[in-house]
Length: 425
Image (cartoon, rainbow, N blue to C red; front, top):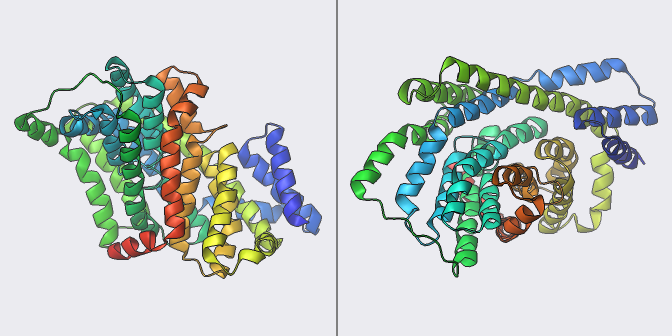
């Protein structure tokens, strides 16, 4: 009964065009009225408590770091390095897009920001070289969604806060699955481009490669600093976010000299606006999460899943299917905030490793960002590539299938996540 009330009020509010944050508040209030526990103080306390979290301070700083990296020239130098080393291969610009996406993912936790940066740089180059535009856009979009899986990841931050799971462990556990996503894109790109005729790029001589690497080494140092600092306990994820933002500011302003006062102000403004949206969502999600727990909605859904509760693989697969369906119609952050408090008690009761589940869940929701009909990353790349959304959907399909197969592989073989995660601990 309460699960139906929650879902019905949430979906109804969204269909009326209400912002997701307020739709979550409406669904929480609906549960309060049904349970006869309406109390404005509960709403205020959980909303304030949800946003007043030290770990969440990492969100605005990682967003700010991403803005500084894109405006300060770090993203462009990542592309230059990828171009120097793999650009001469057959279909080389596709491999450049994949390698650059993997490197950018280790600098920024935002799929939208990475896709926008890569798309603006590479899609025009690929079009001029004779690459199919919709396929190029699809590849860049599929590469962009690696960002929420490779640390630093805003998705892992939010999941860790809501599910009370170690964010450091989530960060480190996402490295190998993120690399596997990139590997799947390499195979898919080779398959779809093997019969295409592209204008070849000249092989870059080693002295030039060394010069390009020297210019871009400052960008490559950032993931080393973050992962090394987390691995050896030098700083927490929140402190890592501050380090990343300061480092990106220093490199962009002092080393590369591309960040002036006006650009820095613009970056701060965009980061503040984006952070405000995220934190309001988190605050309202915490109110909904409290009522979800009081109404025992996880227990009700667990009862629905009881026939397969004895098989961890089937249980995880069923929850991933539900999350995949939600990701098709909702944006990344709302899905994480809505489903995490519902799924985590079920997963823990079945003995599923919470870090393993978190990695799969975030990867699943990230794939939803390139899945029609909503696909926010698809909309971004369609706008940048100046093509209709329908063409972007056709172009992304081979790469969507490739990344979905990696997710299926990780569901069937949990050790692919759990064992590498143990190497970093």
